[in-house]
Image (cartoon, rainbow, N blue to C red):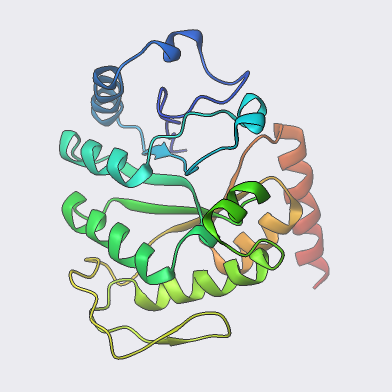
Amino acid sequence: MRLGLVTPVVTLLPKAHARWEREAGWEDVVAIARAADRLGYDHLTCSEHVAVPTGIAAARGGRYFDPLATLGYLAADTERIRLATYVLVLGYHHPLEVAKRYGTLDVVSGGRVVLGVGVGSLEEEFDLLGASFADRGERADESLAAIRAAWGRAEPSFAGEHVAYDGVVVDPPAPRAEVPIWVGGRTERSLRRALALGDGWAPFAVEPPEVAALLDRHDAFDAMA
């Protein structure tokens, strides 16, 4: 079993964070990351929201450090622990943007990036960023394929319904031809997406019995197939 660490301080989720995190500083985050690295934890995380509407922040939380800046800094202060986005909202980014930005992080961290991704559920934030909400699931599926096609390739190409690119240079490419992709979510649909398109499932806000029930249902379905 490998244990990761949901990095404290960088995200404050109501009823989920400790009281000390509100007053903690960046130096505390660095100290915790160094300790986790030294103690053999598998990964650190950082989540993403760009701007949470004021009326929703009380339920969703308002603090979300930018994952690229956060994990980029921590990469320089650690040696072996993996750096996981938990999660990037696929609809907020062009696939080449993800491949370039996090591929660069993979370069400077020595191949330690884990891409945790999600479809997203905060419609107000989609609207704010000019991203399409109604078909976000379909777009996310295509985005995953487009990211995989670009990862580790200096001259990638991809042709999809919503995204297409060719005749471009992405330099530096990631140092690996593949990147672990964990699909986050709390629904059976997110589990199905992880099984079909990802390398792992990263459930959140789901109690252990619910996770077990979802996994059991899919084991039973596979046994009948």
